[in-house]
Length: 541
Image 1 (cartoon, rainbow, N blue to C red):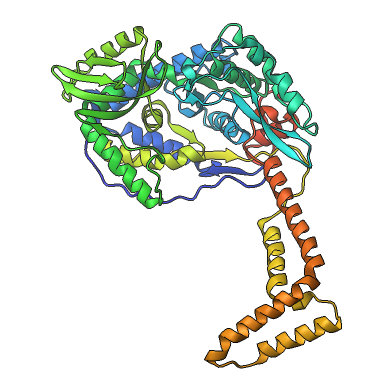
Image 2 (image 1 turned 30 degrees about the vertical axis):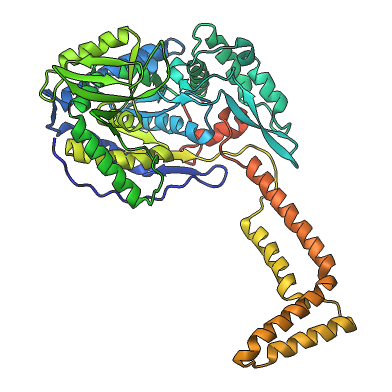
């Protein structure tokens, strides 16, 4: 593996501001070229990973993920139209199995479209190694004129844990979720999708108690009803496959080199993007004595708290640990063989120990070995500039190109939009009353006298010694005029406060972050299916 310099360039990516706005970068017209370029580059990679060619490892990984995705998806919906071979192009995206906003959901529709257009297989990864921070969604309630946001719980609150481990605790809370959302939701929103999603989610919970699975399968079945033909697969099943373990051992066996490349690329990313945070987009990989941090998570079924994986060299291999409860030996060195370590990982998994990828390695593996084209949202597209640099420097070749996709959907609630310019204008008027009150005075004798006195001061050509005195005199005259504009000031203060409140209301009602389950089908379905801007139609519609 050779290090090749890479130039990370600043990219300005912003979500569309208005309802119905879409971002697809590069445009769909360039997708065939990008897909073909990625496949051609993959065919010409000569690199071996500890005696196993990239091509052979990729073929094994794709075969594994395709079989697993078909098996997983076929448990709850028909996959007959997705049964293609592992030689077909694979287009992929992924997100946490939660009730995300419509902009995230839009990726799944673009995934389906690209897969259809390119005769490819579309697979959505359920990123279940991420943690569920709060089992609730934000719901706008109150009135349209005075809205507030409240949380509606999906389940009892528990300590943060990976989606893979998060089981339902209170079926009664989960079962009543749709009813409680409907009771809270602003009356202006009719027939939210939660009414369609929830019977399926509750039915799923009777056979699979995993919260993320219940949410994702209800959403995926709704996609099927709308005509989409994609597959889905939890990332945990990818990480439990032999190809991923081989890839992971490649990194662990060369961890000092990988850690150096990772951190060097991270610091370059922060410099180029003017990032000061020590944790954005990811923290650096740490060194703790003889322990080196690796880009993986480690936990066990008995202690499902996700912790960073560390490794250190020991006799006849390495030791991996979370520096808490887990500590395990792998017969692994930089010159192989890897087969024993891969088998040991399977033994650990049989014992309930779970090794999972972290964000950059997740997309690295998906882009290099699983798919021919990966679809990111804006967040993933930004941090994968860092992944590109790591791939370039560690593996010695350019990273495959990806697609960046998002959309903006806003709840169908009529409200006045207030711009920052409107608020700024009223504040400037209030400032004018303070420093130029003469422009707003009635023509009374007292007012005329004060205005004429101020005009004489403004017209004079003061010496250096007179300037301070003149400023004080003008300020005194301005103060004297203030009672005469008090009524106007009170009105404009009220106008300002009204605008600020309207702006707060508009921001709350016009947020693009509300869960997809709050939208009526009539609002969301046309937007999501309109991939090409001309009412993209699916089979049977």
